[in-house]
Image (cartoon, rainbow, N blue to C red; front, side, top):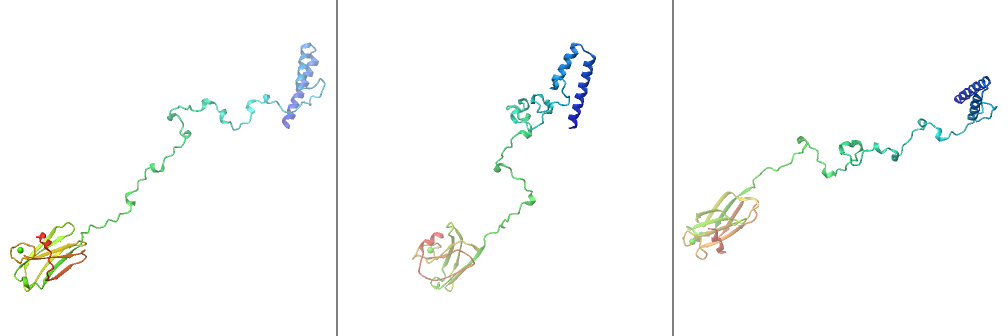
Length: 239
Ligand SMILES: [Ca+2]
């Protein structure tokens, strides 16, 4: 409000000065200038100076520097300020680059310090358990003085893992092997009485030939047999 009053005061002073000049100079040029000033004020000659019309000032008369700033639409940004579409990557500011989605599976795992890796329980290299085999016979009086041969056969591969022989005495014989049998394994015990004294295993009735089985071994085995006539000719294959 005070600014407007100031303008009125200046206008009044200006008008007074014109009136004074007009009174002092009565030539035509001064009169024409006086009329021009009156037209600009919007007043008819003789009107009160203070009645300067008010109202909306046309937009085109507002100085550009007085236009309030505001959000400038994107389409109004001068093209020369935008990087060209084919600009080299190194010329595009980093903040203007779109984020790149990296698949989770492609992210390398972080290095885990060795001291943080939990130890893995490794079972000790324990050899399989072995067991003893005792093999004995009774009632073999018919073979007293004859050689009795024995062969231990692994059923895993048919191999003979031990052989031995004794002379039957008092109708009995016995063998013993320490740690011969593996835990969980199975075996044949093939044996014969060299009835003909050839020094070799001959199929019955030349020799008496037998076969016993040892199932899955889980402990020491004590195999005791009694003389019988359930011969097993195939047992000679083990000698
Ligand atoms: Ca024989």
